[in-house]
Amino acid sequence: MKKKYRNNYIARFAWSAVMLVIVYFKFGGLVLALTASHLALSAAWIVLVETESPVIFIEDTRFIRIAMDAFLYTLAIYVTGGINSFCLLSYIIFVMLSSLYSTNKYGIFAIVSSIAFYNAMLLLVHLEYIPSANFLFDDWQDRVGVTRASVLFTNFLLVFVAVIMNVTAHTLYRNLMDRTRELQVERNRLHERNRIIENDLKLARKIQEQLIPPHSPYPSVYALYKPMEQVGGDLYDFLSFRDSSRIGIFLSDVSGHGVPAAFITSMIKTMILQSGSAREDPAALLMYLNGLLHGKTAENFVTAFYGIFDTRDRTLVYSNAGHNPPYLIGEGAVTAINEARSMPLAIADNEFLERAGKKYSVFRRTLDPGDRLLFYTDGLVEEDGGEGDYLSFEDLMLREILPGQKGASARSIVEGLHARLERWSGSGSFTDDVCIVCLEV
Image (cartoon, rainbow, N blue to C red; front, top):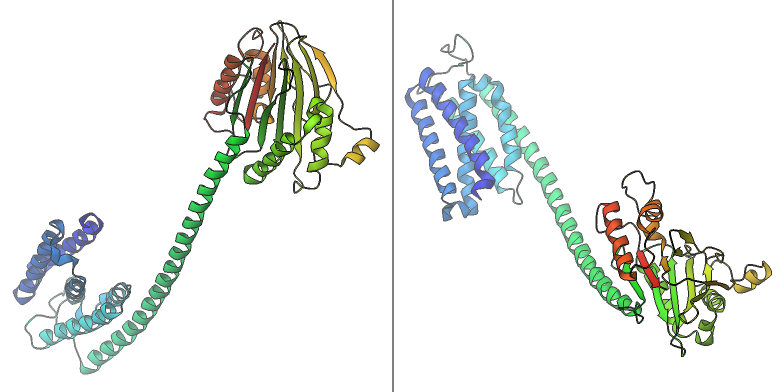
C-alpha cells in the first residue's frame, strides 16, 4: 500500500513545506503556527503509511485527509490574495477529486470543509487575527478590501459550482464503476468460457493423438507430427495388410486449421478404418474417401497421398489427390514423384470426376536399395522464415539438406529436417501443421 500512495503523500508533504517557507518569511504569527501544524500532521501521516499502521486502513480516515487538503487549498488561496485569489478555482478541482468514490459522502464533506475553511480564513482576516495580503506582488502587505457582498457572492458561487461539479463527477464516476463492474463480470464470464474451451481443446488433442499412430509399426519408417495449434488438420496413418511385406502410408492435409480441420481428420480416420478392400488399391481408396467427404466438409478441401510399398521388390504403388509430391532421395539426386497428382478430395463428387476424366489413377515406381522416400504436408515447405540465400525452406531442403542422404536412417532425416525448420522459422512453433514421414528402402 505504501508504494501505491508514496508519490501522493510525498507531493502533499512537499506542498505543505513550500507553504511553510512562504508563510515563515512573509506572514508569521497564527498563520505560521497553523501551517507548521499541518506539516507535522503530514509527516505523521507519512510515518503511519510507511509503517502500515492499522489506522490507515480505516476507510473514514479519508475524512482527515480531505480536511487536511482543504486547509492546504485554503492556505494557497490566502497567500495569493484571499477573496480575490485566482486559486479559488482550486476548490472546484478539489471537490471533483473528492467526489470520485463509490459513496458521495466524501465529495459532500469536501464542499463543506472548503466553505468552512474559506469563511474561517475571511473571518480571521476581518477580525485582524491574520493580515490580508498577496505575496505575489510587491504590495503584499496592503489590505485587500472585503465587503459583505463579495463574501456572499463568492460563497454562493463556490457552493453553486462545487455542487454541480460534485454531482457531475460522482455521477460519471458511478456510471464508470457500474460499467467497469459489468465489464469485469463479462471478463470473468469470458475467462471461464476460455477455460472450458481450453479444457475441451486439451481433450480434443488427446482424442486426436489416439487417431495418429504413436510410433511407426515398421522399423524402416519414421514419422513426426507438429500441429500449429492444440489440434491440427494433418493426418498420417500406416495401413497394414495380411501380407506383412506391404506397407501402406497415408497422408492428408485439410484446408484451414484448428478444430474444424481436426474434426475432418477424425472423419477421414474413421473412413479409412471402414474402407475394407479399397485400401488394397490407392486410387480406389481415394475415390472411396472422396465419395464420402464430398458435401460434408463445409467447403474445406483435403489433399491426400496414399502409397503401398512392397519391401520384397521395392515397388511403390501410389495415388495422389492434390497433395505435395513425395521426394525420392537417390544417389546424388532428389526428385519429386509428381506423376499422379490430381484434384483434392471433397471438391467434386465421383460422378463428376469420372465424366471429366479426372479419376484418381494408380502409378508404380521401382526404387533402388538405399533410396529414401520423404512424404510431407505443405507446412514443411511453406514455413515463413529465412536462412542464408534460400528463398524458401523447400529450396534449402532440396539444395542442401536432402542431397547425400541416401542410406541415412529415416529418423535422422526427419529429425534433421525438423531441427533445420525450427532454425529457419526462428522458433519451435510454426505457421501451419507440419507432418513428415520418411521410408527407408
